[in-house]
Amino acid sequence: MSNEAAHEIAQTEQTEKGLGSPFNLNAPEAYRHWRENKLERYPTDPSALVVEISDLTEPSAPACAAIRALARKCNMAIYRTNTRDWPLERLRPALLRFAARLGLERIEAHRSREDDGLVALEVSQAAGKSGFIPYTNRPLNWHTDGYYNPPSATIRGFLLHCVRDAAEGGENGLYDPELAYIRLRDKDPAHIRALMHPEAMTIPESVEPDGGKRPASTGPVFSLASDGALQMRYTSRRRNIIWRDDPACRRAVAYLNGLLAGENEPLIFKYKLRPGEGILCNNVLHSRAGFVDRSDGGGRLYLRARYLDRIAGT
Ligand SMILES: [Fe+2]
View 1 (cartoon, rainbow, N blue to C red):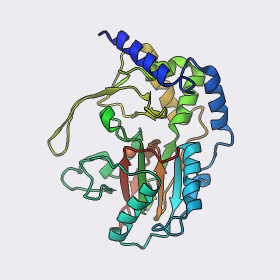
View 2 (view 1 turned 135 degrees about the horizontal axis):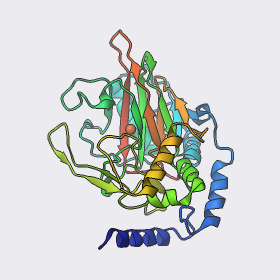
View 3 (view 1 turned 60 degrees about the vertical axis):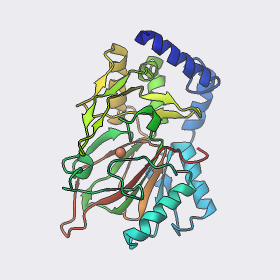
């Protein structure tokens, strides 16, 4: 089958899935209505995303409801706990139970995860981590998690918890993929068409730190999950990524990169998590600034879990 024919079929499937869906390019009314709701009273400051959790082991029903409401609006929430003095063996299971309480249960089988499913993100020279940017103090470009995963293992949510912050820097950029969709579609629906193409973005095969091979991953940037939710698969890195050789795709990617650089987009959040705070989200676009660790050895430490689930009820 030709690529064009495959694209036709994929588009038709998306359309059928999305009768009445705001993400259907042939349903401008549904889009207009959803867009209006989405942008109405959208938070302009990340402080509006913060939910206090007075007891992480027993998060209250109102606190969980507040997180779900924020995730419905912005696909993310920041929680603040009183766990800064907790030992890791107490904190880790409590974080996982907390996430599960919000519907994040099926953890990705990541190579760096420990037995409980969490990955410790810190500057590390350990085998399998050394030299990989997440385990250095260098900036991390905008991306969604798991952009190189096969469709069977799409990352739909993650938890990112700050155990220790950096002496300087290390703040996260956070951007709701649904806003990116809106800006792109408003600028030119052809941008959406190009980014929904099933061959829009290819991550070539690579060798994992453990010597295993990760197969090439080809797929769209935007797609719809079987439940109708918008999914985004994206990295702004420039090396080892192949964009579909098509002027429409190049234009769309250039516009998206401009948005991520803050052009025409006031609703990108910048937030530095403090110890005890974390992000729960539906795999939003995120970045990390470079940082300087404290000299006393207590370097920046984040715990992360990636899920095949979205936050329940969002
Ligand atoms: Fe990430």
